[in-house]
Length: 369
Image (spheres, rainbow, N blue to C red):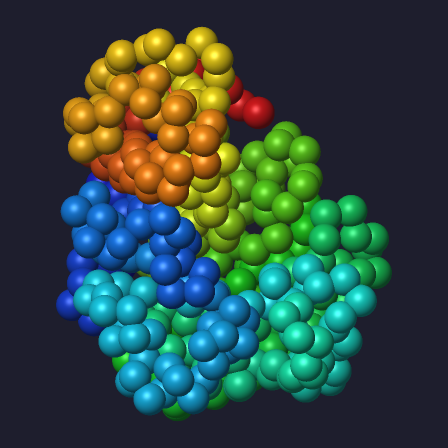
């Protein structure tokens, strides 16, 4: 499913493309997050207009609402939301393990209570893949155990044992049942390098279509995040897509690509947009700042998105300060356009053998923290 086009001369950065049931996705790629089957504040026409061909949705949330029965009646999420391109679904494990006190491990999987109504449910590796089969995603993520940052050695070891057992069950079941879906395994191990390498070796011995790194960008100091990527990067299978889950700051994406990562997702550009923060070629901008009150310039004069072509900072500030929904839409559109162009320019830099300069330029703007 992965074809490599170019490698960077001074790092592990690379460009390529993934064929997902006929949808061609250029890598490195950033995936907008549509947790419940929608990118917050935007239509799918907006997403298509920007250029995205791969988005992410969440198994846990879709399982609870609208539910498997409704998704099955619509023959999958894509038909339900009138979406034609590629879709990745995460397993929902991270969301379950974020429900403090509302989940319990079993030998076969995990029991949990809905955050919506307290109803009780169970997820097993097989059930999670069955739900994703009903959703009809192009890439399905396996159930894994993502321990919080700061977990002790005992908790990390238990996580690895559980994650590996579930991974083996998932790939055995998935290869028989999910004929049109690619299945990715998830590496865990916290910031412990030995555990990370152990997990990576185990998962890469299994016939997963892609390899994901989970449990990073969950509160650890950035130097530990960078260290894990640097230590793990050289051991990642070059023939499979590499996905760094839940990572989305400019510096963290740069660090990921530098160490060979192909795929990223994060709620950051959409969530920050709704809170009035937008991204530009000169750094972050707080739209609610008083200094923009009379500004007639766009968010970024170098940006050619329709928001920057048509709207001033002064107007966008007004929309956010009075809570007009249009403000959320315009700032979200701009941020996702910024991310799309950022990844596009990064691919071009790799192909032109100038990734090192690209990395340094953007790090100087957004900083390593």
